[in-house]
Image (tube, rainbow, N blue to C red; front, top):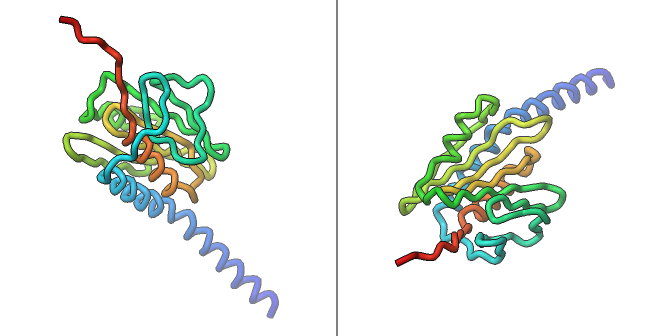
Length: 177
């Protein structure tokens, strides 16, 4: 009888593990859908400045030393997020989205695109190593990336979209007469 129980437990464990690996696509789809909802919402008010860039920095996030206004490195709980700002790209820019697909080394799990008031946005996930995926969220000429544990995809992508949507960049150029 003990052998039969072990066999059932083995099959149950195998089924659970197979179910876990199959849910990465489901988790990614749900996370992208939620990122799209955040994209459509009113943007968060910026509460942090780095040079000419201002953006919403969620509670618990820190701006790391060495960041500049176009490459801002954030950290929370040992996870690193990199916010890229290209001030030469407008709200409708698809540059970062196109670059994602132009990289033959990227194995894309899924992406989603969003448009609102002449602003283009996207969110996606690509295969990384082990139990991690690379997440990216973009809005116009801004994007943010991180490596995420599979269980954190939804929370991370939502937060990333909140950050990237909030970015404001003043180039400081003075108009000449």
